[in-house]
Length: 181
Image 1 (spheres, one colour):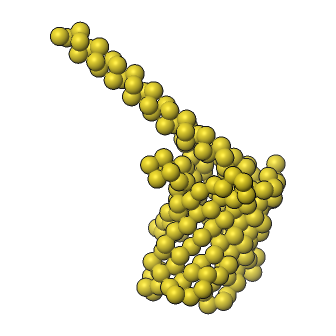
Image 2: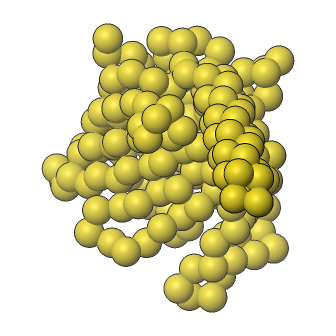
């Protein structure tokens, strides 16, 4: 009986290890679809707030593999061109097999705010799209849609559209991202 238990346990460990490796391989395959994002980038962006005010920034993005090729770590360092204020954020991107979609989580400097988006990559158009729904502190609901065009591996275009409550969707963010290396 003891030998049978050891055999069953050994078979379980082997199956569990093979299953875990195959899940990891699928994540790596999906992440490779977004490999154009990897590298060091210069960025210029423009953000339009709900009140119509405009913020322009310049800075860098660094995107690298992380955690055994399960995630991309996207580090942003930006400077407001009008007042010189600096800000940073980190984004983690992975593929969630259970939801059959990418998950992108944003963490910001000087804030406990986290934003989690879900999305997909459209191979024919080479566009990575994410969406989320935010409940703002003033009670307004914001629907956010982001698209990053990966058509040119040395120059990415990142656009964001926001829809506040019943208002029409507006393009409120555009970034031109050019490869540094």
